[in-house]
Every structure is written in structure tokens, then in C-alpha cells.
Image (cartoon, rainbow, N blue to C red; front, side, top):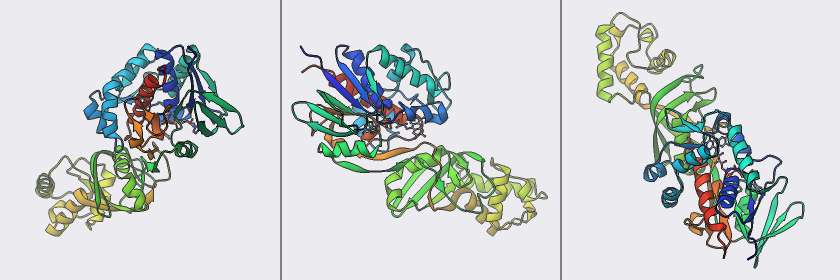
Length: 408
Ligand SMILES: Cc1cc2nc3c(=O)[nH]c(=O)nc-3n(C[C@H](O)[C@H](O)[C@H](O)COP(=O)(O)OP(=O)(O)OC[C@H]3O[C@@H](n4cnc5c(N)ncnc54)[C@H](O)[C@@H]3O)c2cc1C
């Protein structure tokens, strides 16, 4: 029987994982990774602030899919076959123990993404996977076999192809050339640009948790979690999650919307009113600016009382009913106008990609082009921040690997 030749297009997380899993399951196959740039696994290197948030300690597939604004349904079956527990085990058996942080994010114990890169490259090398950089694939022809043409005009023939090109426009074009529909790619996981006197001078202040509601035209999106004030507006997990769930609506509105912030979501409206009323008697003589009866950074508190129209030196005893109402409003329903997407990237991922309907999620094989497989971000799947995007890459690549190495 002749040796099966597989070309993996893209030397990122999904490409490496697919190639490795295939070589481990089918040692007789010949696998080659083609990477357009000079650098392999470049997003792994910069991921998680250089620490690489490999996956998330969420081991129940039903719970896990709740972290994917796009692709949750398709991933349900996929996660029952390969999920974060399998990722953890794989890295452990390949010499990279992972650790879990308090919020569930998992990183290599070394806290260094280079550990992940070294592990993937070493394993690929040990398995005899050929890796070629500077090989930008510009065309794929499918007849009896596949012919993969590179920018350098080099042509390679193979039996199967794994398209793992991430969010690169060239990868999307290759998928379209082979008959696939693209769900238009738009950004996800971004920060908000907001110009507002309440945030001025507060860069670096974090509040955890807050509750956020984003209104875009007729759509409303809610998220809770830590919030970070930045030089240009707002960031932090709550904002990034909100940007992911609202990615498409946000794009349509040109990144403008109204954000409502509840700075003290742990308290009900009534509990908060009670606390403010109590302060009127318990600390009657103190300046409102100097005594914050709820858990908030002092400088933020001072901005909020100013926004409520309360002079900084006014004493608690003199707080009027109208001022109390305004203060309550600022604390639980502060309105901020989002002007555009933040300019600095925290964790950037693409919403959109190859239409899920055209992929068989048992095998990751294209329904339009037999022998072509997909994995990673090129597909219309994306997760919120926290290791979910890499888990999508590991899972879809693993599924593709099990199928594409099977002899006819
Ligand atoms: C700053 C940043 C931080 C992130 N941090 C995290 C994190 O901590 N945790 C997490 O889960 N996710 C994180 N992500 C998201 C995560 O990196 C991606 O979801 C993941 O890398 C997708 O893997 P992929 O292999 O599908 O695509 P990619 O990693 O983008 O790899 C695709 C590869 O294909 C190559 N390629 C494209 N077109 C061609 C072509 N025509 N021919 C040959 N090669 C081609 C590209 O050069 C690239 O190397 C982060 C993203 C960014 C930008």
C-alpha cells in the first residue's frame, strides 16, 4: 500500500497539533507543514502576555461550550471526544505540566509560551514531520489528488490537505476557491474606546466584579467580571467578553454603543440605598468624598460623586434626596458612550470564517471538497478570553487528525 501524503497549510497551533496528532495515530503517513512566514507558532509565542493560556479548567463539554459565542453547537460533540482534560494530559505526557489559576485559566508551569513552542516543535521533529517556512500557499487544485501551489511557484502533490491558516485572508481565499462560503470575518475580543470625565486620570484602576450591559441598536448584551480602566477607555475580562458576544452587532454599528455599568453588582438596589442612608447618620460629619460606604477605589468614588453633582466637601448629613438618587444612578446605572474599538490589542481573535454547515464535525472534513480538512480559527468558531481559542484549535485539529490519516 502506498504511503498517504498529507499537507498541512499553516504552522500555527492548529497546524502543529493536527500534524502531530495524525503522526501519533498513523505513524506510516507522510506529513508536511507549510508555513508562509519565517516564524512558526508566532501567535502561541505572544499569547497570554507571553505565558500562553493553553486551555481552561472546564472539563464538562456542556459547560465548556458556553464560552463560545460562535460554534458552541458544533463543538458539543467535538468536546465529548477531545476536551481540556485531554489537552492537559497530552502536555503532561510530553513533558509540559500545566497549572490552573484562580479564574480557571491554564498555563505551562514555566509561565513561558516558549515551553509550548519547544514541545510542539520537538515532538513534530521526533515524529518525522517535515516543516517548511516561507511557503505561502496561493492555490489548491483538487482532482484525483490535491496540487498545492506556493507563491514561489513550487507545486506539491498530496492525498489530503488540512487548512489551518487561522484568520489570514489568504487562507479564507483558498477555502472560497474550493467552493466554501465565508461568514464575513470581523474582530472579536477588543477593548472599548470611551472618552468620559469619570474615567479621566483613573488608568490602571481595576474593579472586580462589575456588571456591564451593552446596548447596540435593538440588541442588548450582558457580562460580569473584572473591569480595568485604561488610558483610552475600558478593558479587562468583562469588556473583552462583552466584545466577543456583541462582535457582529458591534461591527454593524461601527463600534458605537451605550455601555451601562453597575459598579457594585453584589448589592441589590435596596441594599445599596440602605448603605447610603446609613452613612448619612453613622458618618454624618464626614465629607462624602472622603468616606465611601461601598467597596470601590477611592478615586473612582470621587469621580462618581462629582458626576452625581455632589460637591467634594459636602458632608454626609447634608446629602439631599435628589443627590442620593443621582448617586445611586451613577453607582448602578452609569451610562458611557463607546466611541470605537480600542486601539491596543489584549487578546484578538476573529469572529467569522468557513461556514460550519460545510464541515462534518465528526471528521472536520469539508462537505464540498472530500479530502480537505479544517482546524482552528479559519472556521467560524471563536471563544471568549481564557484559553478557549486554543482549545478550539487543539480539539478541531485532533478530530481532523484522526480522520485524515485513515487509509482509504
Ligand atoms: C495577542 C494574542 C494573544 C492571544 N492569547 C491567547 C491565549 O492566551 N489563549 C487562547 O486560547 N487564545 C489566544 N489567542 C488566540 C489564539 O492565538 C488563536 O485563536 C490561535 O492561535 C489560532 O490558531 P490557528 O492555528 O488556527 O491560527 P494561527 O495561530 O493564526 O496560525 C495560522 C498560521 O497559518 C499561516 N498561514 C496563513 N495563511 C497561509 C498560507 N496561505 N500558506 C501558508 N501558511 C499560511 C500563518 O502565517 C500562521 O502561522 C491570542 C491571540 C492574539 C493575537
